[in-house]
Length: 204
Image 1 (cartoon, rainbow, N blue to C red):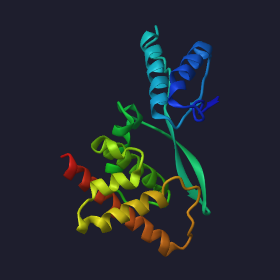
Image 2: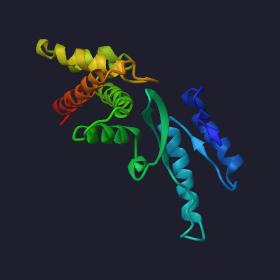
Image 3: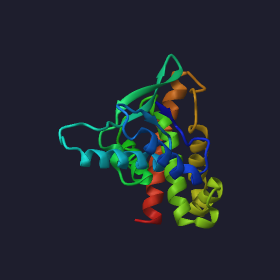
Image 4: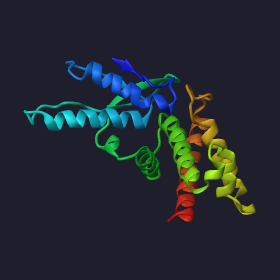
């Protein structure tokens, strides 16, 4: 079991870590690799796909992909392992994150979605706006100010900024009041719509 081997490395070590793992474990009987890094995940996924294609037995299942989704039980966040299906076979992290946010716009969100929604919205905005406004790359507030320049859009900018900062990278929901959680869930849908509308406006 290899748990997020590149989490403390910079990007220069990504291929080195992958190469080391591939050389050491290419012939092992069973291997579990956990990661938060989509680029590293793609390297591992493609390695497994190549092994499967070279297999003499086409029926043999070489690998499975799972997601660890946040779930809340008695106010505590826990991990819920789910089959990833086709969602993680997208070509890039941007495809995956956009797909995640887009599906949420028509979905009845639940408490556990708050974590995923905040993180996904932030990643989507950072990726998209960094491409559109590269000079502001690395500064989410500056990116939002470029994306929402008009006076009448300040309220939307502030709503989005507050949401992606307050509800990404959380370990617990700070408020357990049902009315507060309902408010957060309702706000999530509005934020998603603002983000998708802005992406369409800037680059249809």
